[in-house]
Image 1 (cartoon, rainbow over the protein chains, first blue to last red):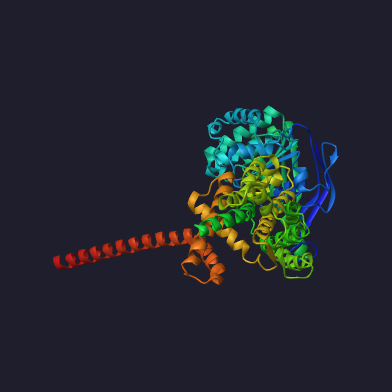
Image 2 (cartoon, rainbow over the protein chains, first blue to last red):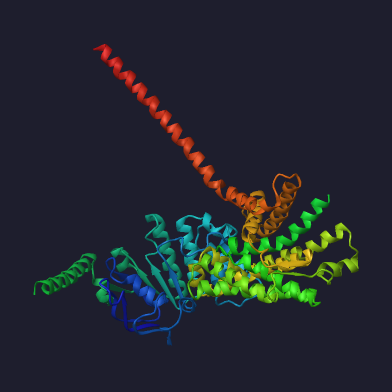
Length: 264
Length: 317
């Protein structure tokens, strides 16, 4: 489904702040994969998403989505087939527009366009989709999104990202800004939608437990590289402690290398 | 009475401009200073074409040229990434030259005696004051129907969303640069049309009469919002238009009772905008001040009771 071939990105090239944010990334995502991504701050997880979404163009390498080379596409062109959910619930919705207007905007990227953005059949479709959330939003379709709580807004954003059936869904710590209970709920809804639409998805998380529980494949990133990529039996056999110890081992190795560099 | 009718007519002609300002300032949420230039641009285009005997074509042309001016500002903002305010000022400044060029190097042009939109209607329907007011209302009313409908279409929705959350628009696979340019083009087309109507109404065009139009338009939008509240697009546009009429009536009466000399007009409009914009923050700081005073009084009372208690204790000892 998604192929990243030898993708590189360096920020602030040629200055003292030079940082290799993506370092020879090779990643093949199979159709139907639900990948969880873990790694410390600054490991390059969000940068990876930004590269896939086209927030910036990569220095070298190819990004191929469903046999189409999207390496040179602009961000809004890529958004046609990629849905992305950010950590900040405020970012994914237009606060001064109603729920149905927000949904209509996301929906019409693929749906047939009539003269008006909203029509009766769209409305009933939105109603049905919203009712599946079980948050009571289907009766508040004319409410401005800015009046909803963070969790409700994130739920609406999730619907907006998936309503046009994207080929790839990227979840960037989308529950991190919510209270634990709401986060659980949003996560459950996410799982439900991914299973229902057979979406290919990638999710960044800091919750190691969720990273191993959800999805079928786990990637660990560090310093712009993918240092672990496990799926299937290996993954189900892995415990949280093992994963953490693996991580600190990798870290230590790197620190040792750095130390050698400085002392020699 | 004549005063009232006159300001009604002017108010509805300027209402078209107020709508343009509403589109750029409120819907697109960008401060668009092109307006000063595109208003004069509309005046100049209309005057030249009216002078050559095409009054209706003149009004249509103003829409077209205004849209070009708006697109220029939009391109500076989105393609060259120049700050919105500066791109507006740049286009406004360059339009000054363009306007002079359109009018053949003269700074003003009279169309007295030529057929205009108003004289044409006057000949067919008669020209009493009531009819004249109706003629002035027609363009505003027409746009009041068309523009809100446009903002309910898919493109219109995308433009509204661009002003609300640009990131979300791009994430929905819509080119927000394009929607921004289209929005600015529509806004400035309205402004230029208003300029064209005014030049036909006053029978002359002056290159400097566009200056201060942003503030006048903004004052109209704010007056409308104070009266009707901040609501949806349709009501927002209608209230900006009514705000424009009220602004003209206020100005007319202020001048009538010799409260101000006529050259004080722009200062007054600026003061209206300042008062209206500072309203919420003044209200809030007043509220804050009240809370602070309350807290202080409370603290003082507590301190004095504490002092009294310690003194009582000492007396007991």
